[in-house]
Length: 267
Length: 267
Image 1 (cartoon, helix red, strand yellow):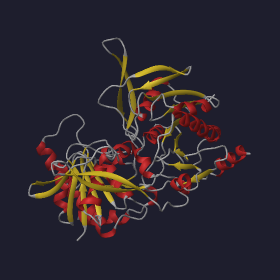
Image 2 (cartoon, chains in turn blue, orange):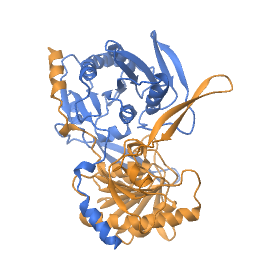
Image 3 (cartoon, one colour):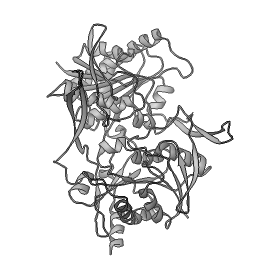
Image 4 (cartoon, chains in turn yellow, brown):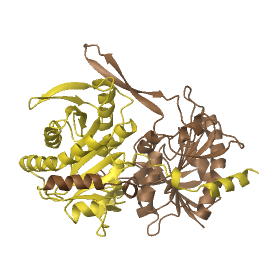
């Protein structure tokens, strides 16, 4: 039976985690190690300057570990402490409340950070995120229902990966569900968009006459077909992006021009 | 004259920033926008839930902008507010106090985060970091001297990039200096090591009899030739790694197996 580690960045009690737990437990032996509280947008940060706590809890009759650290801390604690010797066969992170499309999200997301951390430690992984409505707060019932629908559509993806492994050249999967998911929502294989937002700055004046600045994002309207952003927001499809952990460009870049120049300078 | 944006993650007053400022000002028109205090290991985080402050300061006769946010905030504030319309021609981040070798560092470093943020906004960039002694605290004099030596070795790299641009396929450069730098320290082109440390967990018991956990890193002894870690720690050379911002593996991965399987499930 395959061993699956499940984590997230929203916290161990969140419905997205337990929705995918339900489908994962049909596919393997699931161990949950997740942050005790919300750890969004922490990327791959790990906790080095203070110790961590790990508590065994029960939720809906299932055992889980709640960790005081980040999603990356959870992966490390799971692999080195909870599993002990041999780690999991696969790591799942999610389902996140909110999309993680585009490289802007990839580099900052705790959900994806856990997947990348798993890859760097040698474990295949997949991150799952559900788009939320932009202008309203979804009810707890809506969240639970939609997360269950997303989890049902995640199941065959994980089932395939447990059987066949990740395709050659991919280290992890970044999967994003559109705002509304149903049985018939199609799957699309995409590449990551570079930006979803254009970063802008708004200047204001404080009561003492001094300027201060708000960063704000302007949603791009020119989303490119073939990207995760286009799939989720325009096509309303489930975006599956194969990702690499290795960001060095070594193999494909000809650095001889620079190196020759540097040698000339040394003379 | 080329416009160069200079930032870092150690803070605007640090000697590493001003050492490279000195050589950059021979190469172009330098604008400094850097964090007012130390912002290490913040990766690409940006400040969305509170406003930012930006202060014009003078340091050694030079004007600089000190920003209350992260290195990524500094890049955004510089491009959208300080430069106004047209951004810089090139972004330099560093020189960081401490190395940034391996993917473990790439994903978490504020220094490299600023370079990646610049790339996602469309600007070529390079990050520079100096290895520090592991077991002692360097004196302020040592730091100033060594940063000046590192900056002198950084100068021809930036000079080449300003003239020729980044080689095709590279989005930014990650440059790491060894602990001791001299005129004759060689340059090597490398790929990023996956891990520099093996992540470990140490369990302890608190005064109330409950367990708590420290994460710790065990320095790997099996550094691979050709990597940034090998160059800096074994060869004592200056490591130049061409990096990509895009971590999607789309072009090189055959996802047809997964997609066909998912189609079968839909029937």
